[in-house]
Length: 479
View 1 (cartoon, rainbow, N blue to C red):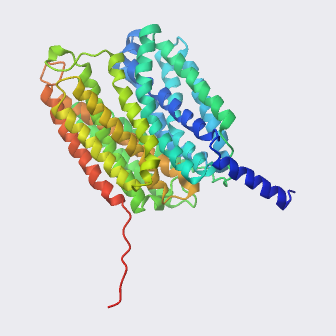
View 2 (view 1 turned 120 degrees about the horizontal axis):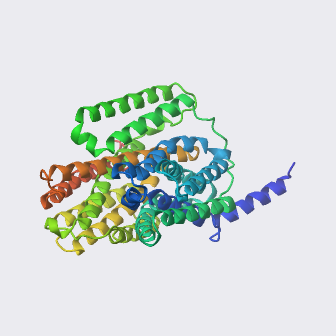
C-alpha cells in the first residue's frame, strides 16, 4: 500500500507534468492527428495513376479513396466506445498497428483487391481523432487541453493540404508505390510516437459496446455514405438512390431504438438532445456540405483546360499545391483559436468562421477569371474551415462529461463525413446539370450556379450557428 505522503507526491508530480510546457503529449497527439489525415487522404490524387498502373477503370480506382473514408466513418463511434478509460492506450496502439499493416499491403506490387484492403485499414486512422481529444482532456490542464483539442480538430485540414501535393509529386517521381511507401513511413512514425508518449488512462472502463447496436450503426452509416457519395446513382437511378437513403434512415432508427433500451449505450442519445450538441452537429452537417462543395468546385475548375473557355489546365500536382495555402491558413487559424476564445465565445467563433466560408464562395463566384481569384477563395476557405473546426469541439465539450469525450466527438466526426459526402455529390450533380450533351466539361455558368447555391447552403449553417449561443438568464425584479 502507498502512504498518504506517497500519494501526495505522485499527485504533485502528475499535476506538474500536466502544467509543464515541456510536456511532449500535445506535440505527440498533434503529430498522430496530422499523420493520420495525410495517410487517409493519400489516395485522392492517385486515382488516375492507380487506374493506369493496375489497368482498372477509374470507377474501380475511385474505391482507393472511398473505402478509406467509409472505414473511417463507420469505425469512429465503435472505437470511441472501445477506447474509453483504461482501454484507450491499447485501442490506439492496436489501431495504429492495423494501419501500419494495411500500409504494407498498399506498397506491395499486388492486385487492386489487396490495395483496397490496405486502404481500408488506413482509413481507421480517421477514427483516432476523438481518442486523441479524450487523452488531451484527461492528461492536460484546461488551457493546454483546449488548444490541443482545437489543433487535433484542425489536423484533418492541414493533413489533406499537405498530403495531396506530396502524393502527386512522389507519384510523378516514382509511381504510386513510392507514394504509398511514404504513407507507410508516416504510419510507422505515428505508431512509434504513440508507443512512446501516449499515456494510459485512469478513467473507469465503460462496458464493451453492444454488438447489435454497433452493427446497426455501422450498417446505417455505411449505406448513407455509399448512396450520398455516388453522384451517378442520383443522376441515373434516382428511385434507387432515394430507396437507399430510406433504408439507411430505417437502420438508423432501429439503432436509436436499440440504444434507448441499453443501460450503457454506444452513444448517449440524451446528450445529443442537448441544444448545444444538437445545434453543433446540425451546423457541422450543413457547413460540411458547403465546405466540401466549394473545395470540389475549385479543384475541378483549376484543372479544367483552357479549351473549355475557362479554367487553367493545372496538373494534378500543381492543383494539389492549391491546397497548401488552404492548409497553412487553416492551421494558423487553429493555433489562434485559443487566443480568440479569450475574446469571443466558441459559438461566436463558429458564426464568424461560417461567414468567412460564405465570403470564399462569393470570391469564387465573381472573381475566378484570373488565378488569383480561386487562390484567394481557397485561402479564405482554409481560414473558415480551420477556425470552424477548432471552435466546434469547444461548443460540444462545454456540455459533455469527460468520460463521453470520445463518443461525442466521434458522432460529430461521422456527421462531418456525411456532410462532406453530400457536398461532394451536390457539386458533381450541379456541374453535371450544366454539362451539355456530348460535352466533357460543364459550362462556366455551372460553376457560378454551384457557388451561389453553396453560399445559400452555408448561410443555413450560419443561421444554425446562432442557436449555439447560451441563453441569457432572465432576472426577475420586484415591482
